[in-house]
Image (tube, rainbow over all chains, first blue to last red; front, top):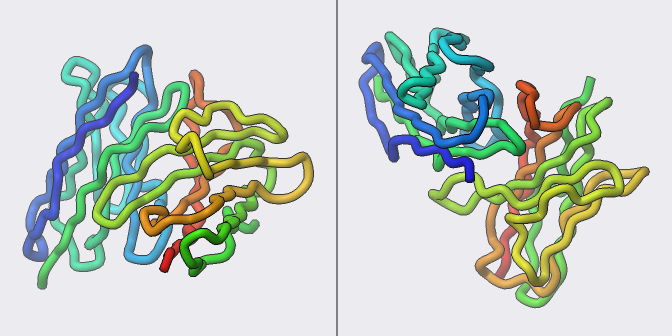
Length: 109
Length: 117
């Protein structure tokens, strides 16, 4: 079946540091890939998505590229802010939506 | 345009009682998904429903849990005879179309946090 593997947290970074959260997937066919973000006490919100190989999703300074050859969709941001502190979920959608375990990011001033 | 509405936001039950969680999808959405999030754990799929149909319940525990999405009204996740291990956040999400071949995102509610004493 489909699965998503993402790095376990927590990840603690200083403000303005570079962020990478790794995500790899296993799926049949050609799934769409997503990153969702969950702020404390809230539900998940879509951060970015990519629907086919080599697509790059971007939003709020975050980027991720759909790499079919490595079955990866790593999340990156060049300079994190304290307000980026949240839990980030990688997900894929084929027949249903499958989420990774989530990576907690804490950005300290 | 209201988003996905879940209620109650917080629910406290004693062991053995019943918990009912409600979810109203976004307007125009006919697909509803329920997920459970345990403390410090990820999001676990429970069930996927369309109006009056359960499409995939592979993530639902076989006993005590049930879900429905009637023709009229919200989707209901029902937990009978709750136990302490049922304490979790339950999230509902909706989408306008099915997943196969689609690229659509899920729209999430803010969750219902169940505490079993």
